[in-house]
Image (cartoon, rainbow, N blue to C red; front, side, top):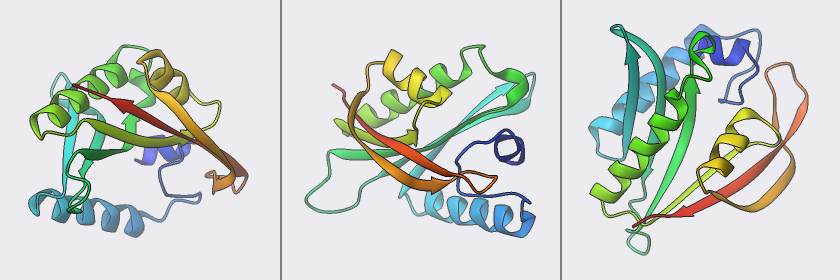
Length: 150
């Protein structure tokens, strides 16, 4: 998370990074995983964590088929090595396991994430101008995307 924010990722934090907020965030993720609300999928190389992604499993009675992908993060020293793609393939495998056929996500417009998702067959649903503030305080548009899986 620290590396991602320092590299400009829109993952919910701004600079200067508040480490208490980061720890609180991961604590909340752990609680959600234990509660069965989401999956935390991790990638490691040589026993070192190099990437994560989350799959939120919609609990709403009218949306048992839907999941949301959150915060694909790959360490900057490990980018362009297929780790993000591998994490996204695992998201789809897990979504299928949990009987989710529609996946949703949002990503920074024009960023590496958007390029990856498009390459993997995700479809743009729409763009929201000035949706987020990047780590340096600049307004940034986000692109909402979807993918049907079998």
